[in-house]
Length: 294
Image (cartoon, one colour):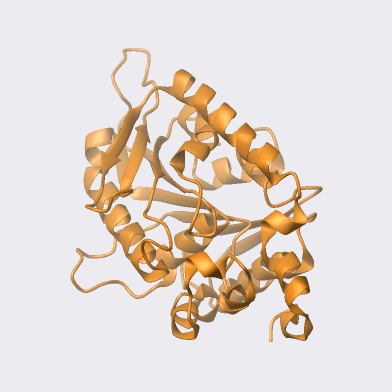
C-alpha cells in the first residue's frame, strides 16, 4: 500500500487524481504556451530536426548543440541531456518540449529531444522498447556530437518521467547492445505505479491491461543506481498524483539510490514544465547542477 489509498475512491474521484487535465481546467492554455515558447526556442537555438533513431513513424529526435568556444570549434566531452515529453503516452510530441532544452544548451550541453510512437497505435511495451533503442543510438552518436557518452542525463516530464525511470530500471533487451550508462535522472511530475491508470478514461487510448500495467510499474522495481535521481512534483497537483512521486522517491531510497524529492510551491502538472525550463528557479537550478552544468 502506498501513501495514498486510491482504491477507496469512486470512479470520478480516481479520474480527478490521476487525469491531470481534470485538475487543471485551462490546460490547453499551457499547451499553447508550450508550442509558442518552443517555436521561439527553435529560432534561437537552431538545431538538426527529425533525425531518426529507429524505424517507427515517430522514432525521431531533434539535436541541439552548444555554440562552442571562442574559436567556433565545438566543445568536446560535454554532458548530453535527453529530454522525453509527456502526454500519457498517447499525446503531445517533442515540439512541445523544445523550450525546455534552452537552459541546457546555453549552459553548454548537447540536447537530444526525443519523440516516440504513441498509444493506441503502439503499446506501452513498444514505447519502452523505443526509448531503449534511443538510448543506444544516442550513446553511439555522442562522441560525433562532441558529447561524452558517460555523461548522459535523462529528463522526462509526466509520462516522459515514467519512461526515463524505465530506461534505468526495466530489464534490458538481450538483442540490443549493452545498456549505456545513465549519469542522472530528472523525473518531473511522473507516474510510476500504473494500476490506477487502468481506471482512468485515458486508458481507452493507452489500452493497458493488468499484466502490462504490472510490468511497466517502475515503482515495483525502482532503479538501483549510484547516480543521482531528482524527483520533482508540484504541490498544487492532486494528492494521488503527488503520492506517485513521494512513493517512488522512497522506493529509490530503499533500493539504495541517491534520490532527492523536490516539491514545487504552487506548481500544477502543466506549470511545473515552465519551472523545469527556468534556469533561475529551484527546479531548473537543481537539474542544471545534477547535469554538471552549474
